[in-house]
Length: 494
Image 1: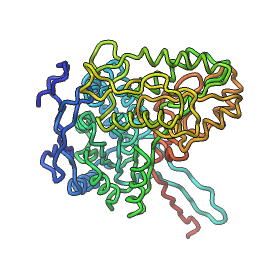
Image 2: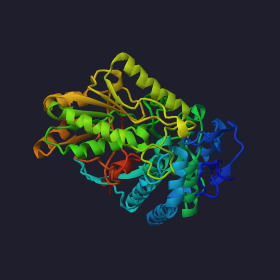
Image 3: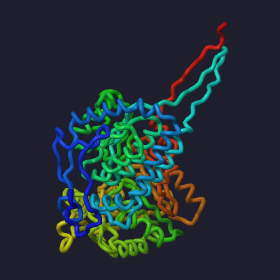
């Protein structure tokens, strides 16, 4: 398949959009296919086959059939397969970066995603031969009581479009490390890089069926979460879909991990390095994935005494961001994912202006001219926002930043915590005691002090409140896919 016209020929071909089930590519499916578009141009990128309930059933059965072979390998062998997988992904870094830019419109220079996935894979591989049980003191009587960590069986991993390979590395790899097999259902908007990811797993030595990649629409997701052969579900996405996942999982009482939305606060105290605070917040909330990220700080909460200076610098920084297509020189922010997303974001901005949620300081429109065919939204900033307004409480999932004033530390915490979400947060201050104090009181799963918490592979990541539950990353991320079996041996016999 030749690459769709994008002004660049960095790839000779776009990878196949066919499903990966049991080690084989599947083209003809019961759910048909969809056109995957290039967000930068609105043009066709590839045709992607979609799984229906029939293909989901085949994939789950394939995963269940493969588990015996996967568990039959020694821990050292399984560790080495995951390490080879990581190395193959690392070797394909350039290809995966280009694919990501084609699928998402993300500037090519921003390539952290592939590197991040490799880091997670190598970290998790180190746990394969270190998963231990424990002995339990028992009284009274002479007995030996011990635990054995066991895999669940088959894991369903439902990944988002805005970071599919990284999400798969955070879900599928620890599940495999724990001895499970996996069915990954990517969001159908961006699947090519994940299908390539699955191919690399096969090349690394995963048994056919140990890792299946089945993009599909809502009916595929419903079939997966209600399938009796799925033993655990890990989902990343929006709250509305999460509720459907939970309803489906209830069919078989399947346990679920949820990583959901966010409306993170970036708190800037009067003693902060304002340049660092502004650059970090604007770079994340507006430029990173064009604001399409659940953990991004889309509320900047600044102390009264420095609010005006912060506002001025935020507007200057936002207005100077270079918006353009993924492969253009100097581009800092690309398009949003679809036409519908573009219209939704513009609609939210217009509604906020109409309601008087705050002062529109910059942006707020769709870009035209040479970018009219793509899905481009101007970096948008609202000032003097009331934290109770919809623009401050709704996860817009686009390049929209709200600036909010506060007086003292207590009010800053009250504003930051007054949100249905609790995924991340940032604190900018030179006062070490305050930094620890505020970080400890923020209702968030991850807090960065004077910098964005970079989600290291060795650290747990996840949210509280409506941002979900369960953890990805670190040992906690592996233990999510293990359950302890208790064994009691009576030693009092003859």
